[in-house]
Structure formats: C-alpha cells, structure tokens
Image (tube, rainbow, N blue to C red; front, side, top):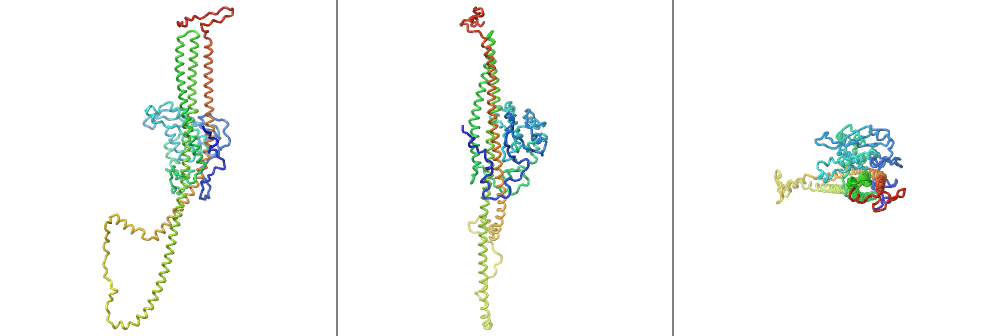
Length: 583
C-alpha cells in the first residue's frame, strides 16, 4: 500500500492559502472574502487537540476546543458551546405512525435536557440543507439507504431489520456529533432547531433560511447562498458543467483531487473488501464454536466422573470462545467497518466539494472570456461608428462644394436669359416636349411577387423591410446594449473572483481540518482494533486455562502403571473395560 503522508496535499503551508490563479486578469479592490454572518465565519483551527479523546465513534470526530462565544441564538447553542465535552445521544428507535398512513421508525435524540424525534428522511433532509447552506464545507455523511437487494430479500421487513436499525442509530449519532464539534456547523440555528424538537421539521424547511435557498447555488454567493441582498449580477454568471476544462487550473486542487481518488480507491476498494471477508470468516468461526460447544456439553452427559467434568469444562471454554468472538465481531463492526465505510463516503463528499470549486473556477474563466468577447465587439462597433461618421462628414463636405458651384452656374445663366427675353416674348409659346411629364398614376398598384416566392418568403421580405431600416440607429443601439452588457459582466467578474478566492481558501482550510480529524480517527480505529483483540485473547486464555486445570485431573491412561502412593503401594487402577463398556 502506498504512503500518503509524503504526498498529502491537504497538509498545506499557511502561505499557500491564497490561490495563485484565482485573481488572474482582474483587480479586486474589496476584501477577498465578503463579510459573513457570525455563524458562518471559519474559525482558525486550534494548534493542540483536546487532552481527553472520546471513544470512537460516539464522539463523531477528533474533539477540538470550541472557540469562545458570548452571544447565543438559543438554549441548544448555549449547551453546545458551554465548554464541556457534550455528546448527543440517540437513545432509542421507536416504531410509530404519527402523521403518516404507514408505520415508520423514529429515532429519539437527546441533547442535554432536550429531546426530539426524527425519522431517517429528516436526517437526510438536514444534511441536504446543510450542503446547500455551506457549499464550501465538508458536511459529514449519514448511513446509506437500504439497497434494492435488501428490499427484495426482506420485502416488508426491510425497514424493521434490527441490525440495520442499530447500525443507523450508531452512524446517525456519529453524524450529529460531528456537526456539533464542527467550528462552523455547530453555530447553525437550523441544526439547533433540529435538536430542540419544539417545532416540526416541515415548518423549519418552510422558514428562513431554508426557504431562501436558491435553485442553483452556483449563481449565489459562496459565503452565504441565502443572502437576500445579493447582487443581481449573480444572475449574469454562467452555469458551467463539471466536465468543462480549465485554462489555468490550480495545482493545489489538482493534487487534492488525485489524492482523494487514491484514498477512495484504497478505502472503498481493498480495505472494505478485506474487512468484509475477514468479518465473514470470524462469523463462521463463531458459528462453528457455537455448534462445537453444544456438542461437547451434550457429550459430557454420557460420561461420568472426572472425564465428564473435563469435557463439560472444555465445552464451556468453547462457548466462551464463541461469545468472545461474537463480541469481537461487534467491536470490529462498530469501531472499524462502519468508520471505514464512513470515510469512503467522506471521499465522495470531498470529490463533490472539489467539483464545486472547479465549477466556480470555470465560471470565473467563462465570465472573463465573455467580457473579453464583448469588449472586442464594442471596439468593432465603435470602429464602424467612427468610419460611418467620417464617411458622413466627407459626404457633407461634398454636398457643400457641389451646392456652391451650382449657385455660381445659376448666376451666370441668369444674365444670358435676360438678354433673350424680348426675342422669346415675340415667338409664340410652344410646349417643351423634352420636359413633358406623364400624369400621376394614382395609388401604388399591388406589388407583384416574383415567381416561386412563397408566403413565408414574402412575409420575411416584408419584415426585413420594416426592421433595421436605419443602420445608424441600429448600430448606436447595439453600442449602448453592448456597453450595458459589459458593465454587468464586469460586476459579475468581480463577484466571481471574490467567490473563487473565498471558496479556495475555505475549502483548503476545511480540508486541513478534515486531515487532522482523519488522522485522529484512524488512530482511534487502530487502537480500538488492538484493544478488541487483546480482550478477546484474555477472555479465551482465562476460559481455556480453567478447562486445562479440569483436564489435568483426569486419571492417567489405563495402560500406564499407576503412580505409587505415600506408602509405596500402587494406587487403584481404573479398569479399561469400564471405559470400553461406558461404565
């Protein structure tokens, strides 16, 4: 197995928190991270972990000291930040049909002195809501849904499987405790209302901030997607695909993606497969010992004396091995298999987080490209406008010169006509056929269509005649619209640059926090596995030592000479026929 520590991109230096490529081709005058709601400010991770580490997985994650907080939004918030090592418990799972036509399982949550009841779908809704409220934070996973195979095998009893319900209780409790120990998520009032249980979850979903979540979080501020005062320029941002390539990718997040893929391949691949195979073999081993212990206990009833006692004690030792192996299986499932599966889910969550950051980066680049294209278009339109004005000025000068020359010619012609007036008056007036004009034809006749010109072509021809009759007006309208679009794109580019910087720094900070949590959890998992095997060995050693003591009391083999007693006389020998005849 490859080593991850030397190439782990989640361990970043403090000076590398800012992206080198996120602010390319844009000057951002305002701070890189917009002002945020106090509940959504990322606290700097503490330098030292807590001195008392809870047992995994009930603690949910590596326990960190909560930052000092003086203003509390509710009693749950005050309890979570009381400074004590608080723990949320799922005390029970009950079958009920309240507000439903069919029965379902509800989980009883106890957080301090508050108690609430929620079904699995409401846990899922809580997590989906947190994902939309905090798109740059790693939201802990919840246990997977039942597969189609489970429903096909168990049919109506799939939702009432005791093992599945117990597993969900443990993993949902881990989910709640991970949120309670998160430096940002623990301040979310939606989470507090989920723990309180004073109002129904449906009412929480239809009240702010959940009712203000936009349909597309890519077109909303990264620091607060439900901000009602968000700039309308967010609507001008594009909606890129996750597969869209980047022109200038950030190498840090490329390394993070490669590392996450390798981590997911190891955890969800060989490690989970080997774990399932190992637990199956332990389960078969326990089942074999269960049958062997029952057989030995039954066999001891057919014997007498010390042999019967020794066989019975051996059967008890085998039963003790069965019980200790069953306990070992439970510990392995709770402290190894379930956390391992959870970290496989974490890998998928981190992939989606990196995809969101990738889309934000693509969004920035696409906005920059659109802005550059519009600026080039504006330059072309302005160039055309300048050429049109220059041509118009040239034509205007030509008209002025031609008008002056015509006036000169008119003055010269007036003198010649005055001398010939008398001669023309003597001659009889005759009509000038060269200047004859035909009579006005009246209204314009209907314009004939060219042969083969259909109705649609005629309609298109008429519309084209009605539209864009003035190219100068159309050109100036295009310039004004392009300038307006450029102004919107400049605002959108500024917002996109801010979102990209905030997303990069916040995701990197939460990846660092997750790496510390992962190291602590894997350490706790390994210690729990070692402790479980040690306890298994101790219990088995004690049981088999007791069995060995009873076996040692069985008399020697009848074919061997008996040991002499204190007086030197041979001790009584056991008749071999007694063993053969069963006496």
